[in-house]
Length: 273
Length: 260
Image 1 (cartoon, rainbow over the protein chains, first blue to last red):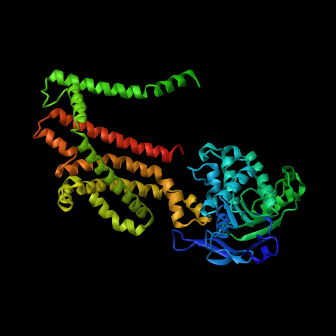
Image 2 (spheres, one colour; image 1 turned 120 degrees about the vertical axis):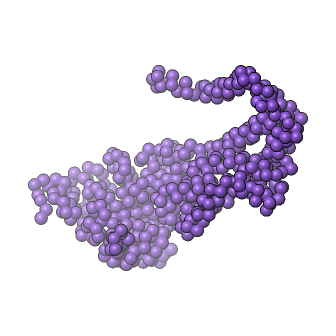
Image 3 (cartoon, rainbow over the protein chains, first blue to last red; image 1 turned 60 degrees about the vertical axis):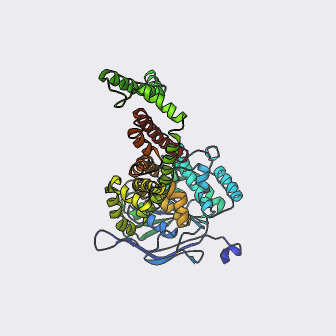
């Protein structure tokens, strides 16, 4: 528990300072995935990270999750450096990654089991989470019996089991159809708002970024650098109809311009320099 | 469901046991026909009903039981010890590159050596008692189970390993809750091969010299007793033992691996 939490201040402040990550490549030179990433995310803020393939979006999440040590720079949560996975930082991967031999409830219970949570606490919390994500009726089924949307809900519930203050999502619903994706995005925002959790979401959809986030971070192609930090001028709670607002198309245009693409959502005829 | 698929699925489902029974009946009939047509004497090829009758009397009189029990104990111990060691070594081969580089040449060489050629040496070292048979069984079971375990552990989804890491799972928790369950289907593939080889191992061990066991009974039936129907009844016992043990492994596999 940090001093901030003890004083009742909201927690979940992320600070990334000058982060660089590189990987070994077949040649002599290392592949630089991220370079000089500086980013501060305030508690409860929702930040979307968008960028072309190979811009290191997923790598950035792995650094914040403590799964990858950067070559340079530091990531910190509420002033404490993140050097290894931390129960206060939860990550939802692009694929559900459910254990195929476990039932839905046993999958959601998995992190609690690993953390040696007492069985009564575990049961109560799993039941609550399954209710929250609407999977009570399929708690006894195994992943192969679930739909894609149900699997990803189970994955979200599992990540929430350790009650993280920061939630990292790596294109979590990208494999789902558009209608399911929109619904899950809405539910995700409600979940995050309930828990006042900080959200860092990687996406490759401009619309999704605008719908979800307070701020959209645009990364450049490899090596990934922050090229823009764009505020989304939409009030909360949001509804899908908000995406038709004029400010949205301006924001989208600005994001696309920074991504190096011509034109915005409704800005036909305009071409970025 | 259309008529065609209904007909096909019922054709496939109902007579599964019936087909097996018919095949067995066909085999027995062909055997009988061969005996009658060629006129073989019982000391070359006894008729199926003679073997059946001898099988029943030999079990009823207690001729086979003590030998079958001894062979079963040898198989049980050898399979248990061999398979357990093989899972441990298979895991090491999968996860420790140094272990693989150091051990695999010896493993392959040991596997290439016919167990029949090693058996006399092992009998010399471990004596004519049960120990040498257990060792031979364990040796013959080891390779297929170790390789199946190695392949299964290597195939564990990296995404799941990363997931466990994100929840701060300890090394042992990863082994217990993730790697072994994920590799079970593959490990059982090795165990199925291993259990049938264990029967072979026990018989080979007994062949070199023993005071009891189905291998001894074969030698007695062929030699001093000159009871060829008993020899066939013993062969039938060995075959049944193999089928039952294999079935047991499949049963455990179904319980543990289930539907997935």
